[in-house]
Length: 376
Image (cartoon, rainbow, N blue to C red; front, side):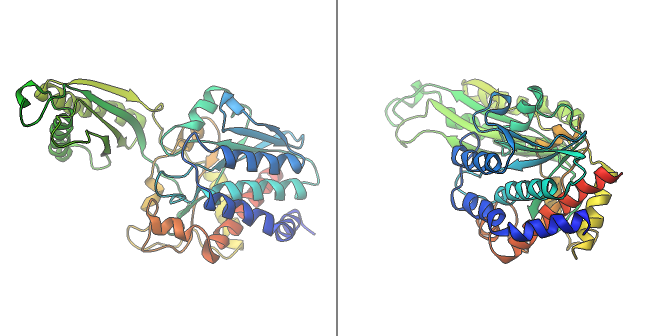
């Protein structure tokens, strides 16, 4: 029996376990930096199966780094498990974590030559917190020969092409006053956001077509008869590369400054994480993954419906990892259309038969790709 056949047979025997990782995460979503139950479940499972687990990797409470084997080739499977506030697993991170666990177990069972040291790196706060960047800085990705993961999407899309992104927490401070009796004594923090958003809207026509600027006001007062003295929002600025991002950030910041200047408020912009970088795909590894997916009956090179593969441009802190470690980040379709990522209907589609097929194919293709790397 070939190593790949051994791996596939191992997944078949342990399928209920791997599937349960996905369904348990899906049923109990936790947002960025709060993934305590997911962290406990994943680290316990890997420790019980012989992995040496650092349960506080990089000094982060909900990060982990599990290691198995002693081979000279170091291959990491990347697990994400944070959910979106209010939307649950609407980006399918339950499937990402389960595929990483499944692939790791398969390689450990099939690597009879003991050529591979298998890593499972649990990375919190992908949805805006930049957990991988903090772990990079702490050395958790040092010495790796490859970092592999899959991501669910509405359709298959082999090549990740994420935009670089900056995450801002924007706050205005004004002066409260009775809106009917003493409006002239107030400084309206909510109006500052209105000015800023109008300025951003007008600026968009002069921005490069790959630029994205979007955000939400999370708090801007609670009583209509009281001028808000504080307003807070979260804003993302995206561009094709980190270099492009650096070239336009000051223009967006000027729009928020306009809000402060026009209303008399004080402005504070805080970075929620270091910027996410664009993705650098390792073409050789990706070709292996595509070939393995084809052997499973999944044609990663099929032309998707127009616009359906746009998820591949979504930003991720895996881009920062790919700048220093050979990496791939293919998207596997879960048959969700017309629902797409970050919609409630996509969260609903992240469990069920089509999602399980993507999980099975993703774990298998990742494991087989790791075994191919050992044979190179």
